[in-house]
Length: 416
Image (cartoon, rainbow, N blue to C red):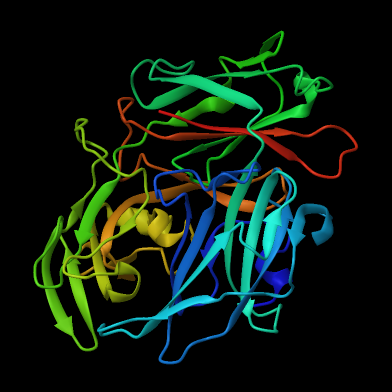
């Protein structure tokens, strides 16, 4: 796939474009629970890693692209947003798998590194491609660089402007900053706030104007754009040892050349009462027992999902959602309905670890501010909505003054 086809006019996000490229992760400072964000001050770093399933090593280069606040590549040249020593950039940290049924090579890139550093804040994407073939794109890894000049805080409440302790949550936000650092900023018109719930892309929100302001502060209160479906806890399973079924795994079978992990049958939860659980807000962690290095010794396995839910949902589509599918909505993540069994099925090739997932259903197509169309997904058909659900809300604050060539990222936060 070419760079133009891979990025186009759509929003950039982390995903693989090659079926042999698996387990693509963007992790800040070694903590998979952190936002994929680093500081412009150079005191933090992100690690992009993935496996390429093959018997022979593939030689891979990468390009770094700067994006605007809405994750579209902007018009800056590399000299505007990067400090670099050598181009092109090669992936040099490569290791072959060891003692695994599936042969693969593990690739890692740290950013910043000795070859390239960010010169400005904002949204970035690392584009991986076949060496010396920049149009042969294999994967995209998205992350952000912040100046952290604006500080966000807020509350999440089940008492919303549309219901009371029922199906939704409402976010109230407050921003604060030092006017000596942002002395010329017109916060009423030049701040753009981006909000995501559990880093979902389908229901993300953009707030351009605060509801009220004070000196060095902006507030976003009773804002309908900040009302979200409350959802439910993420479902969990673990496959960390091929000899024993893990959490939510019914049984394991070896069908050459890989193991198959048959998960317990999932039931629709939209009519159930709320039940507390502890999840990872849709993320996953690679983990395996009895190995020294999970990067190259963890096995790949086929996870077999099954869902007992109303047959009529098949006309809308039921999608398997979470970081395990990179939020891609296509035939690879849409559940297949078997009318004879009365169940939805899907199989995914995954690496040993602890995973979160949910089943979401499209309710309508929506046109985004970037002009692309994408489905709005709902938890109400399968997972249910409970105002008590402890969701993670990620806040990104951009400074977008009129006439400036790029959007500065001036603050990030997580609110629960």
